[in-house]
Length: 167
Image (cartoon, rainbow, N blue to C red; front, top):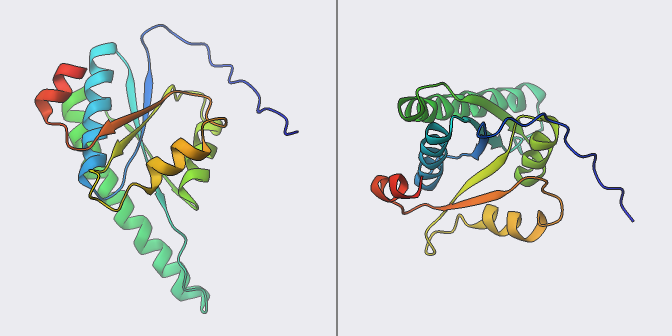
C-alpha cells in the first residue's frame, strides 16, 4: 500500500485562491486562463500559468538535443508571455509563469506538490471533435486519487459573456 503524500500546510486566507491553469498553444487553454483570471479578479485571488514541454526525442548529438530544448523553451515562454498579458488585463495583476519539462500529468502533479500556494487546478476542455482531449482523460482517470486540490474543467467553447456569467 502506498503512503499518502503529506498534507499541504498552507495557512489559507479566506477568499485568496490561487488558480493554476495548464496552458498550451490552443484556444481552450486561453478560455481556461480567462476563466481563472475573471474568477480570481472577483475573489481577490491570483493566477499561475503552467506549460509542460516534452523532452526532445532527438538525442543522438547532445548539442542538437540541447538546441531543440532551448527552442522549445523559448516558444513556451513566448506563449506564456502572451497569455500572461491577457490574464493581467483581466486580473490587474501579473500571473506567475512556470515551464516544466517531462510527462504532462506527472509534471502537473509535481508542480502542485511543490507549491503550497496552488488551490485549484484549471484546465480547458477541447471541443468533442478535437483530438486534444488526452489531458482531460488522463486527469480524470489517473488523478482522481492523487490530486489534493479541486480540478476545474472549463469548456473551451465558452464565450467571454458566458465566462463573466460564471465568474
